[in-house]
Image (cartoon, rainbow, N blue to C red):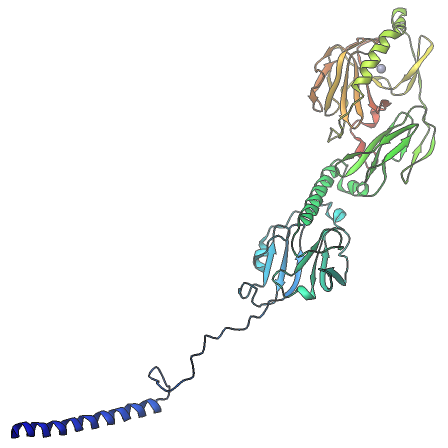
Length: 469
Ligand SMILES: [Zn+2]
């Protein structure tokens, strides 16, 4: 019993000691924690309800400037803010697709883009300096314009004060600024494509002139006459920037579209009177020209050939049919060449007497050469007639488009057939003396809307270069 009591007493004493030690320890820890300079992870001090991770207030980026460097290329520079997608620090974006999409880029990347080769015609087709506009109407509201850039009279871009902080700040117009859109609409895309096609057409047409300077003089300048001074028996090429017609010597010629212009040839009949004529807003000067006379002596049998009017009329029908249609485009892209290097026996326009009787004006050149000499196509074209005719013998007509034909006569042999496409210089026949002919030669001329035109105008040249050599 006593042992038990004793144990009980000594147990009480031990637990009191234990409690004391714990108390001192607790106070020590509390003191330590209280005095700990840093209040580190041990802190158990009461704290207010936990605060969420602080999110910085988005600073909207602000479009500061832009530049369209082409119809489909450009860039926008922003202040260094946070864009709508939470991306910070995008300061430069560029487009390669006419503003449909914009992607982050850098000055270094922009500078590394290949610079297109300088184009001699570029200044010609770039529109006049940017149209300055102070405000524009968008979604029914007037907006103050910070910066605007017109690439053509129709296509323009603008940055307004109201839109500068938006993720897509630029507005675009395809109608010269009447209506503006925040997205690239099908109308804008079409306007850009039309403009690119127009520029390509200008480039192709410009290649037909003697030099880029000559093209600059002719293109986009209203009515143009190539040349402005002409002679009976010659021809003129008329160019205008739009559709229209030209009334000339009793015939109305419709201007035909080709590349960036509208064209017609005007033949100068031998009967045209010298003097000034008005074509569009240009003056065409026709000067007098003296043509020599040639006396030809032929056998009676040959002379009689011209009396078979029925055969002559039947041939004329074929010729008229062949020349009734012409390709609606210029089929050549370079100068015309002489079909043979022959000896000129009858120049163009000679008044010809056969056996002392007036016959006709010889509206062709006669080039004498040995039988069998190859005859070359004067330029690219399509064979519209190739057959033996009564007066002209073996004859060929080539269509060079837009109403221009070349004619070759008296050949010993035809080397092409109707429908063949020929290239300049191709051999189309051989020199001969078939039909109404006194010896081997090539009778060669041009026809324009069914009127003859002097071949001398064409050799080593072409209608686009007549005024601009
Ligand atoms: Zn002849």
